Length: 279
Image (tube, rainbow, N blue to C red; front, side):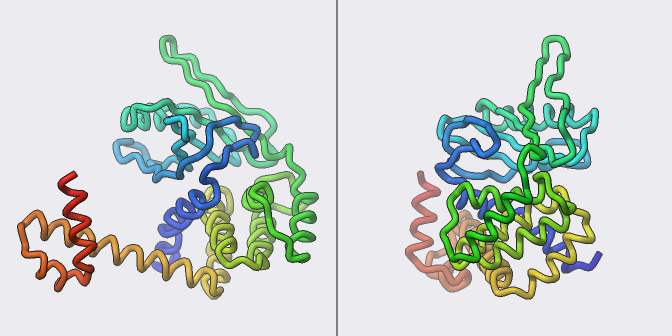
């Protein structure tokens, strides 16, 4: 794998968190048949304490009722999956001290899966969602007709587009993922394009063959939308680095004028950081 591919894969998570927050904010997860409080934001889902190979939950949403919704995407059913999810939820609770609810989203071809663990005093349950119950071909054709007509997409339409590859389709999920991205590229609103493609790229890492993802990213990297995405995240990274440098200089009692000089931040930004530090 080339170094560029590694950078792309690493950036996918940043892209998808930003996209999911923008798309899901104030929405619920009834798309999956899951009745939840409205979503406030998507949160980074790394759990560094976990001493196992996979340390990242798929997605975690903070909800308006002060609880967390944990989503896992699966295209296979493995005996140890629930054990891993239980460990994730235990550590998430230890970090946040808030209720955690977990749903497992299964791709087409899976019609049943275990949902309950009974370890004596420890009971654990998840909610399964079977995407094979959704007719991907019909939804694809509806979306194609709507987008070609230049009509605005509803939130439900956007969710249908993002999760189209996991549904029951007459083509394989890798092909349908490309179809979905091609549909997203036809959306007239550029901000919606960024949200949709960002979500599709990030989520595709979870269920599409690595070689197919690389090919997909090679194509997308040449588009203006993806160039804008990576430019945006690169700029955000630079700004975050400046902020961290300014904070360290403040800790060392460096004069504010020198902080301005060496970080390039505005004096008002530094004063705001000082205020946040005092608070």
